[in-house]
Image 1 (cartoon, rainbow, N blue to C red):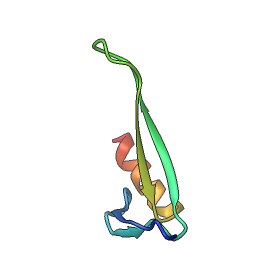
Image 2 (cartoon, rainbow, N blue to C red):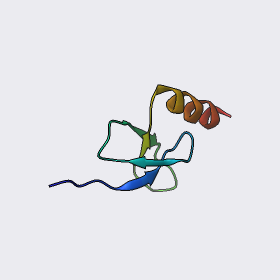
Image 3 (cartoon, rainbow, N blue to C red):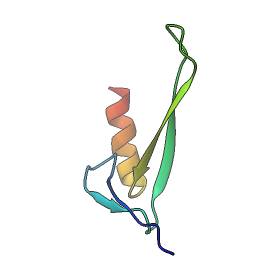
Image 4 (cartoon, helix red, strand yellow):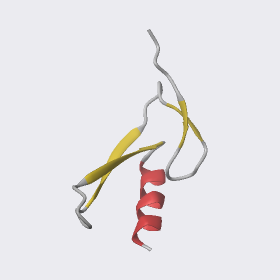
Length: 59
């Protein structure tokens, strides 16, 4: 069974079919304000999109 889904790439914002090869990364948010640690997942097409996403995140 194919569980593909179309989502936006976190690096280039273009469509990404999850049934094809892609990169997955998780961002960890620190605890604060009485809340525990939170995680958010991002899907990316390739290393180039990852580098763009990371560069934008660092700004």
